[in-house]
Amino acid sequence: MLLGAILASLVLCAPAWGDEDVNIIIVDPNGPAAEVLHRSPAQAPVLCSLAEGYLKVTFLSNLGSVSIEIENQTTGEYSQTVANAMAGPMVFPISGNAGFWTITFTLSNGAVYYSDFVI
Image (tube, rainbow, N blue to C red; front, side):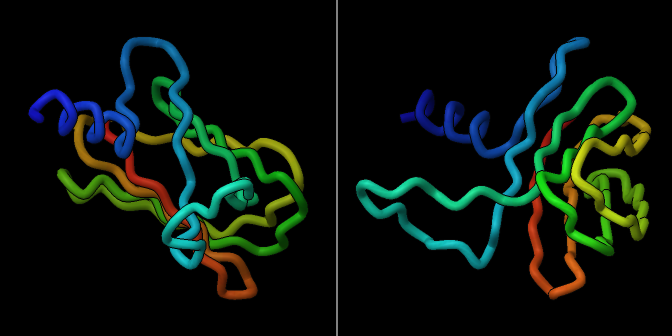
């Protein structure tokens, strides 16, 4: 049972190990709570990966004005920016300090996407 809990925490919080990029799963809090058989889950319009010292965010389409909040819940570090989210990648520098981090994307239409990760 303990092994199952450890594996679940690794899936839910993407840890950063070494110099490898780590994909961060972006969640749609308004998406379906349970998967329906024979349907693929909806994909958020944002991809995110963690590398040493920065987050690479890729917008899958032109989303217009997007508010992006990055916070280290452990240390209290916080940054917010509003970006014109054109299709393609953007880089956001972060301190890389150890802790429980969140990233939140708020689109101009009010849709919110977020993810939690651990460094």
